[in-house]
Image 1 (spheres, rainbow, N blue to C red):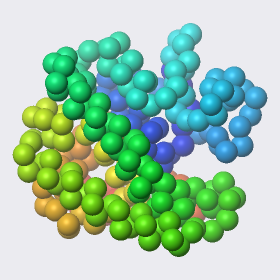
Image 2: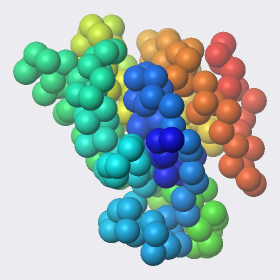
Image 3: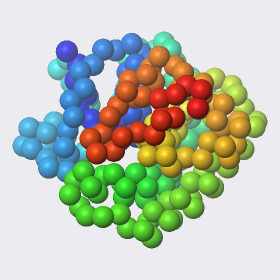
Length: 221
């Protein structure tokens, strides 16, 4: 059985889970308390990070590398275009969300509100929370600008860029930190992603001590 060592609200883990589901690869989910690394986990990934995917006799780490590996292993459905310009745009946006959005928003909201408590690191830093709440507006506006010109974030086809963005936003939506009324085009885009069968397991996630809002699993949010 394939195994994915993960944390439920980690956007990087969710990105891999979405890719696995789209490729119809069955996987056993194993929660990993990466902040309390065990020798076994460090042997799987010396970086001490999740996600880590175990497939047959291979151990894979780093979400973008895992997703690109899976897309080459199982070409359909194609999540990274073969056209060089389209492929660049997908990778650019994946990096945007996994780097810029993560540093400016996810780490300031999700990590402060949830991860600190779960890992026993204390209380949220109000300055960080305020910063994240401010910066997410800029990112939502940028996404809406892209979607005003394209059917999907990176072009006219759904790609890994959409799943990367949705992984971050779904984690934040779990704690009600996304204003879906800011842009109708963005809400419509998320509704399409949210209604995919690959997304259903994410909507069933439950984090002890942090119940999701009522709209979280509602497809007609």
